[in-house]
Amino acid sequence: MLKRDFSSFKEKLKEVLRGDFLIVCLGNELRGDDGVGEYVAKLLINGNLSDRVLDLGMSPESLIGSSKVAKYKKLIFIDAISANLPPGTVIFGEVEELEKRPILLTTHTVPLSLIVRYLRLTIPSLKAYLIGIQVKRVEIGANISSEVLKSGREVANLILSLVRNER
Image (cartoon, rainbow, N blue to C red; front, side):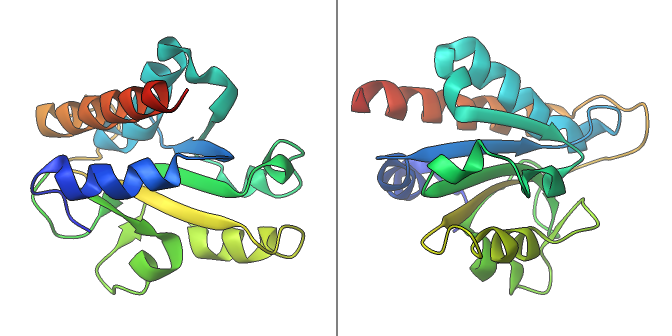
């Protein structure tokens, strides 16, 4: 699902944010737009959602063996993507479905779907989603672009508002 407007994204995300979920933010703030996951993590933690946010930086594989993951039924990854879309475009869907698209790449060496398959060995009912934000630049030392920064802020604000309405 691509972000043209947040209405359809909002409804699906609202469903996913019901019940047990953990938000897993990924990225490298030293590489420009690749740091958007860490940026969103900070916004969510500052918005009093720290009990549901895990900032893993560049190491999604550290989820494997994490005792924190075992108590959740849903993982929501937030990460920078490279999918030949306009900078700042937000995609959302189940990890396996999104990774079937040949143009979608996260910035990690290990595909998220592989990590999810491994986690399902111990948590068979685990659902995994990706909120991906299209990068503009990922050069070392670059700042996050205004388009990606804006989308990251919108995603964080949407999550915070949906979670507050559920509590």
